Image 1 (cartoon, rainbow, N blue to C red):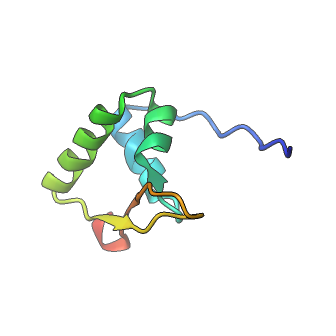
Image 2: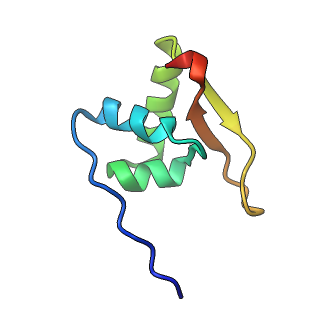
Length: 79
């Protein structure tokens, strides 16, 4: 099993941390976001909804690697 390097610590308000994670090219699943932000999945989904309502363009991407989990990311126009 390969060891993956630890992910850098996030700083600042959780909303800014969420935007940072969603700005990464592959995007992130609700499960990944929940783990990194120490949120419950329903809280993560609500935060994604609030981002969309605030006018930030959040794109829903197809799942990777045959999983059923959609990925989300902020589009270039939404930054």
